[in-house]
Image (cartoon, rainbow, N blue to C red; front, side, top):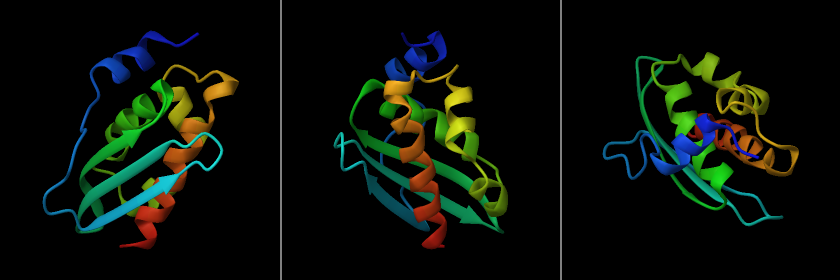
Length: 117
């Protein structure tokens, strides 16, 4: 059901936890399944210098939060804003339709994060 990439991000999430010195923070919730994603970033000179996440939810939500922080690292704000749920799903080796909501949650978190800049 899940790709090896997704399972690796779930078992060994990248950039999990609080981000001291974050310059922007957003928290989004999927009201249907209850997944919660908190995304924090330190932005320097129009780029995301560092990003961290905290997630409560399904396997896919945790893995998606992990891969999202990898995708955001070093990106210009405009490029970060162009990340789509499909980009996140592809980075995880493809999400099954039943768990695609995790990628959408990440895209929503990025949009909210960029509004707080």
